[in-house]
Amino acid sequence: MLASLLFNKQDILLIDSNTKIGAKIAISGGGKCNLTNESVEASNYVGEEWFVQSVLSRFDQKAVLAWFDQRGVTPQVRKGGQYFCQKSADEVLSVFHRELREVDFAMQTVVSSVKKVDKAFTVETDKGTFLAKHLVIASGGLSFPKIGASGIGYAIAEGFGHSMTTTAPALVGFTLQPEQFFFKVLSGASLEVQITTEEKSFSGDLLFAHKGISGPAVLNASLYWEKGQIEIDFLPGFDWGLLQGKKQLSTILPLPKKVAKAFLEHLKLLDKPAEKLTDAEKECLKTLQTYSFAPAGTFGYSKAEVTRGGVKSSEIDPYSMMSLKEPDLYFIGEVLDVTGELGGYNFQWAFSSAYCCADRINGDIYV
Image (cartoon, rainbow, N blue to C red):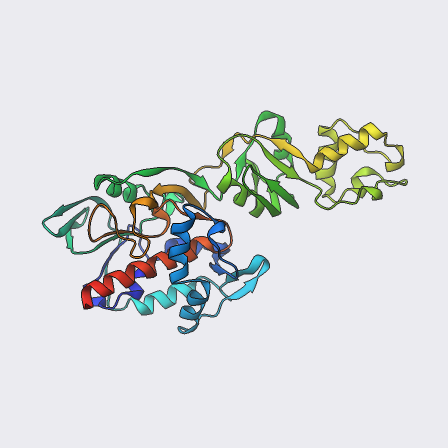
């Protein structure tokens, strides 16, 4: 996006360790690329609120949608206000390919180090050395190493004296403690839940997986979880007045049957007619609305959609994305310690920060 927004295309070199540009775009949103959201606020991000808001306000979701619409891509809004490509992420990639016809690429090129000599950045790679007046780090985080993710952006930042906010996998599934190992037997089943961490609560689908639990609600909760308890309501909005009559519990509970039976066994309750439940057994059942446990951890960077943490935004100018420690060095997107929730927020952040950076570089070149 940055290269697309810069004026003088002939002076741009885009260095990428992958064989093709936009590797993460291609696999995002199940291959349909969730570009942005109807509602984008600083509260949808982990990061310094004033910094996030400053950047987003310069190139908001309406501006992003208008930019793509002008280039023939009109995403469709779906559940949760999420904008997805109508057919596939290739629609977005095609726009960038057209925009970058005049840009030079160094693909399958791995950066090893960066130094500054006089007023020029010296970028050392496995394909040779490149010099630049302006250097923009848009290398993302540690998530999805199979598509080239690495910590090179952090290493460059630290080399120029920048501080880091501790990184961790985010928008990722949770692994389980032994007490919750029975979840693994339910692999493949999904249901709507509400998950609460210390900071936020999310409603959405939970998916039982071989390694633990995943699904949109879990992924969002992982962004705010560091350690300790989470609480899951497996029966959101359930009317306990329905718990009567001759129907079996596993039939009345609004859960997939094998999930209902597994929870009854976990709670040491028999699957029996509701009318035969004691008051104590009803109270025991109600713990399914406040089911608390501490995840053992997460599925890790290989499964995480994003990386939480990164280069401290307090050391970056939000109006230009330029380093406050090194002139003409810029950091945009996921490499910074700003991370969005599931729903198009991280692409929006990438696009907004790219706009702020492009505006500064364009002004510097043409003033």
